[in-house]
Amino acid sequence: MRSFCGSVFALVGALFAFGLPAFAQKDFLTSDEIEKVREAQLPNDRLKLYALLARQRLDQLERLLAKERKGRSLTARELLEQYSDIIDAIDTVSDDALKRGVDIAEGMVVVNDSEKRFVDQLQKIKDRAPADLDLYDIALKEAMAGTTDSLDLGKEDATVRAAKLSDEDKKLKDQAETDIAAEDAKGKPVAEAKNGDAKPDDKPNRTPPTLLRKGEELPASAK
Image 1 (spheres, one colour):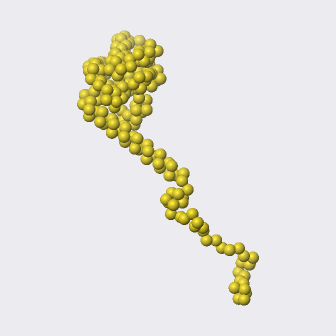
Image 2 (image 1 turned 90 degrees about the vertical axis):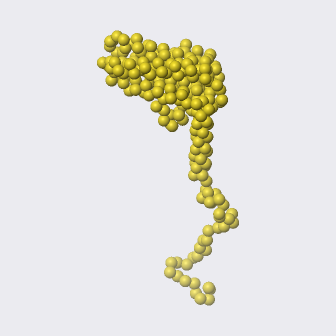
Image 3 (image 1 turned 45 degrees about the vertical axis):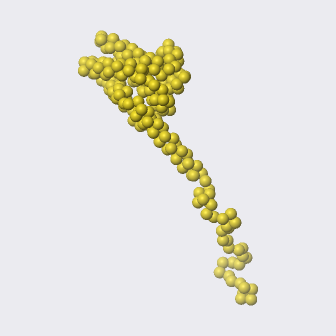
């Protein structure tokens, strides 16, 4: 689900290892959940917590769709969007931990087991094809794709994944430095941009002033 740009966005909004995740600012968590995230300082604890919150969103969705009721599609879409944000948060926590060399094997076991269940739950909802599915079908597809991508990431070797993340960070840093250098070069004077090719004392040739009218010449004796 996440493109390279999406990865960049995840990097910018990355969870800080010992603080409140930037994701909480998007209001996909309740105030109580935000407080629990604050308390879950260790990556493994935070991964387990997010897996629990994702499960709660899907369980709520299952109960909501169990009965036909007017206006439920809006709530269904909101639950799916919140669920997708939580899955993105899981990926960001694991990425951040791996880049710092933190062992998250314990938390990833819980996440992987949970996401396998999530894929099945989402697929069953799609297969049932509720009457109002078209009103939250996009959110459902995004939730399914995000879960599958996250599950695939979790299956990668931790060392290999950490190396990929470090390489991506280096490329982003190098590109940023290149862009800054290019912007700086745009504002330099022409002489400076040519690396000082023109000497400081060099002056452009100029025609000396004259009082002669156009077409007039000095007499031969005055030349």
